[in-house]
Length: 397
Length: 95
Image 1 (cartoon, rainbow over the protein chains, first blue to last red):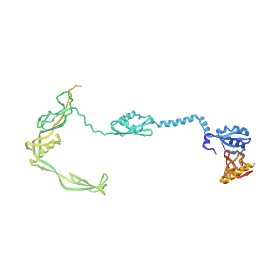
Image 2: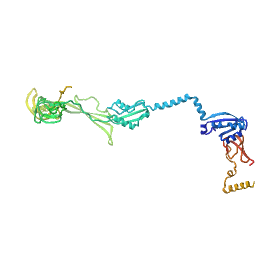
Image 3: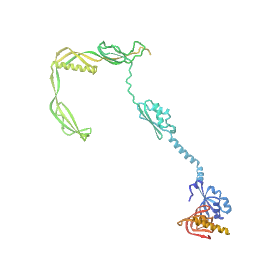
Image 4: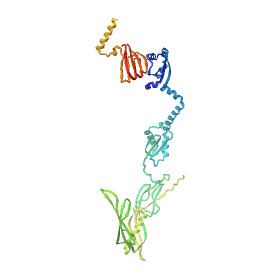
């Protein structure tokens, strides 16, 4: 038996005693309070026993009285172990340095990552983090509680709606949720709104600026409708005039309209092609061979299979090839004129905007010549008549 | 002399009356044996002889002799011994 752990801590000495009266020695030592255990006879007739280091040094008087002689046969336990360690002091120091180094290196912040930012740059976030003490090679025990850190980071980043800080081992992840802001709209320089054409004003609504024109007022092209300068004071800063002004404008159109018209006619001949559709691909399964028609149109109709309201990626595609013939049709003069005016109106709408309203149309002149009708039309149109004129600052820089 | 005898008688009477174990009253050894391998002896009065085949212990009156093989005193206190080994024979002399 090697003794209990308490004895191990105190240090166990194995002692061999010879000569004298070992039994008497044992009795006296025990009476003196010395702790002995594992007493046995060695092969040579010597008494072998174990005792603690402290008791070993108390053996001397009992030995003298019983004329026993002892020698130490073995040492074990912590005191001896410490001595051994002391001999390997540098090994011990190295071990300590290793563990301390490992601990210190693992308690450094090695990387700071930023996620979730789009408009806010990484640098901005990292700079704010640095101001709060979150940066590379920072001791992680010097970092604040992540929640408090996130709160203060959010205060430093006004464009972020929410900031989260998470510590993962030696890296810190800062997640940013940006606040959505409404678009500011384009920046405009101060301006007047002026008339784009000669017109009679029918409606004027000024959002910003000073309305100059009034309803039923005749304006010429270039006249100021809504002014960007406020009041008579020249020192007042000019504004961006904004608003809607509508007026009646007269447009004169010269139109040439032919007396014949090309018409597309189906001959009634057709050919059907069937396709099998799987996923996004079609595989032709009938109606092979080139198109038998010189001019033709193709009408496609797809039917997809479905099962219990669930659309399946399988279906069929019917392609109908229809023969087409171009016919020429002669128009009467009235039809040609109506068509010409219609074209003129369509052209006008694309020029002045879809919100224009044609109030009246007047045929000024018409002439039929060479299979064509030559027309001159006057269109009375109510339309937006504003255009912008930038205000050049008269004040020197 | 008669006083001592009286004392003894009184002791014996009390022991019988209170049903006290004999070892407590008369300072007798108490042995606990586990098979032939462990022996626990209380109330001894010191080691007289010890070798790997024989252990003699002094008692308050007489002596106890344990014979066997590979005997080892595992632990020993002033009044108790714990012996291990192959125990073959236990004898009590002069009680």
